[in-house]
Structures are given as C-alpha cells and as structure tokens.
Length: 155
Image 1 (cartoon, rainbow, N blue to C red):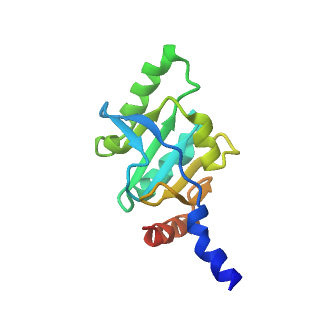
Image 2: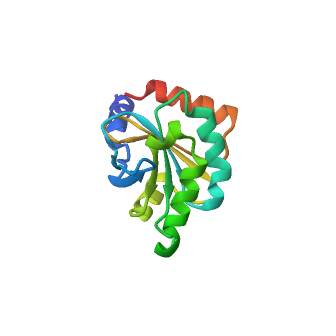
C-alpha cells in the first residue's frame, strides 16, 4: 500500500520548470511554460550547437519542440551579431519555435541538471510545466526512442 501511495505521489513531486521569457527568431516574445506539453532543447554555449543541431534535425518534424539558446553570458556589445548569426543558421520554418534567452540562466541550468557546458540539454514538459524527463548529451537512437516514449506518455 505504501508503494502505491508513493507512486501516486510522484507526479505531484515533479520538478516545475521556472517560468522564463525569450524572444523567438521572428522577434516575438514567448513565455514558457505555455500550457502545452513540449520538448525543450537547450544549448548553454556556442559549442553546444554541435549537439543541439543534430537533436533538432532528428526531432523537429516529429515532436513539438522549443529550441533555446541561452545567451545571458554573451556580452551585450556582441549580442546583436550573435543573434543574427543564429538566425541566419536556423531554417525559416523553425524560427517561430527557436528562442533566444537573455535572463534566467541559473534557474534553467538548475532545472536541466546542468553539468557539462557543451552538451545539449533535452527536457520533456507536461502541459502544467512539470519536467517529466531529462537528458543531456549527443543524440543517439536509444535516447531518441526514450524521448518519443516519454512524449507519448506525457499529458
């Protein structure tokens, strides 16, 4: 009976993603979580694009995904150049769901269980903004299958 009570309580204990705001590559402000289940694909460094891009290519057409570049540590003087460079590298059909985030890096790192700067961080959120699954590192077939299974099970 205790085990059943523990298992039923697990969703109530799920970590909440702290609300944050970003600007998509169409220059619109977006606030997440937004009330929809989604995959967040987060890069914290320029070098993380070596992992976030392959993840994005693999999942973009199959799962509702937000690509997020966290730029809080980028000096204000060069943010415009960095933003332009990112925008020019992202296909037009993905720009609406690609966010540039300039605040809240510490909280996002905590939510993602940040440990390796140049990794891709993948989070699955339910519609309430609870983190249902976390992964960091390069895309693999096994990780992708786990991601798909988790999204199928996430309300």
